[in-house]
Length: 292
Image (cartoon, rainbow, N blue to C red; front, top):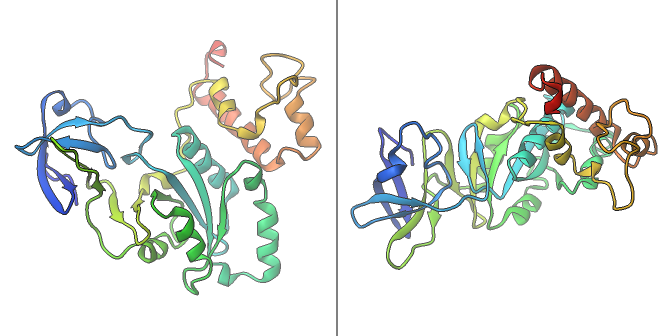
């Protein structure tokens, strides 16, 4: 179901209601006043009168209340782009969505190639990101994904050509509006817009294709401190610290993070990616030294 010409199609229970926004929600300058995934209340005259607080929201496309972002790549054709993978992880964490990584097309890989790829991606386990190797063509590993996302709202992102459509088709049988709980006084539900497809999954949750989350754009990180907060492996135990309190973990002497990288306790892949992001943001956005 879509938002069409100012109307929202909300499903509550087994019914679909054509609704419009009421009051302050009608502000045309507020694109995020009511978005895909919102839990809303509608009145007896089918007006959306309230949007409940969101646990998260992404901006491209506008989607809210996601449990997991599935970041999908292919083991081959095309090969895994680690910078793009880590950029999608960065976006996911920035928008407060737990990431999951799926590597599809493993039927195209030899056992040696699979082993090599698992080793290359082993850093994901250290930052608590689940990793699944699957083949939608030969139905390998798909049930493990289904078991993991049962009852959850899951968005999909990743480059084209990695089989997102194939796995989405395995996870759902039809396209319809998202179902929310119904209140006693007002009917509460969720709606979708033309920006994304919100589809009931076969495992009791919902799947949503989020094409905007396939880009390699960096999130709007405002300063160095916020960037650091998005790298879980950089969290330092109490009693440990770098020589300088404002250490940026780039070229400063006595940097604990650089020491942990050298000791292979922090992934060099992740650290190199951090440095790339730091330099890019410093040049393109943090042009005032005091901001970072």
